[in-house]
Image (cartoon, rainbow, N blue to C red):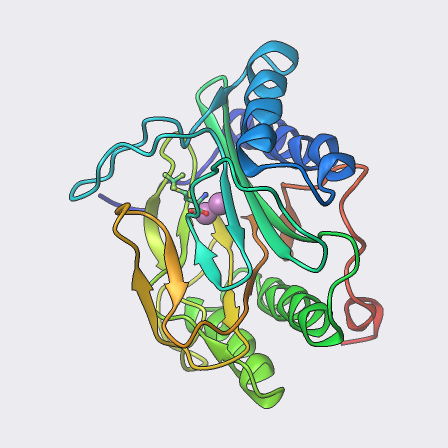
Length: 269
Ligand code: MF3
Ligand code: CO
Ligand code: CO
């Protein structure tokens, strides 16, 4: 496998898929309240993607080698769950934090994005973790331009997260995306500046840091998918799909409900 470069038609397809993925999160947001189950969120999202968007939920039956088929249409990772949480019949409760990760396929193109949500009001510590993880993602996005390297993205995320006393999960990373869900390259959320693959216009990949309040170590649950922190500390993740443009980047997974970029993004460089 090699990195795929998107031409104008491909970019148009990726823009549409990206916006639709983000619009699923806009649609779900008002439902994320104490008492709703993650299975109910999954059913709502499935209906919206299939019936309203005329798109396909990419996770459903997704079967990377070595995995069993993913059984649901979205991922919901609650509290100490890091990623790939499988929706179930347990109700969300006040104070939970939950990552909802949406990937849709539209006209053969993938859009992949996730956000953190508070269920009711969360603790100050939980809110801070979610806010800092959002900033960490944007510190990575801010590095994206032709000639920069993947290590610049990882380094910016790691430096910011660790400076604030958090840890970066190493076992999962961002990824190239296009007609494939997970394409090359791997986009690590840690690293050294000036190292790794050089960014070029037409590349599309995700940036999706998983940041833990405690230690970085993780383990997989017996369901073969759900990843949790070993020390049971809280974990947060945000994800955008990004296009490298001739002058910098374009965030493909934006919609009317996307939170604004953090304040530092509008400061002079
Ligand atoms: N959306 C996830 C990512 O950001 C992948 C989920 S794979 C699934 O790469 F099968 F768990 F859905
Ligand atoms: Co992804
Ligand atoms: Co995702």
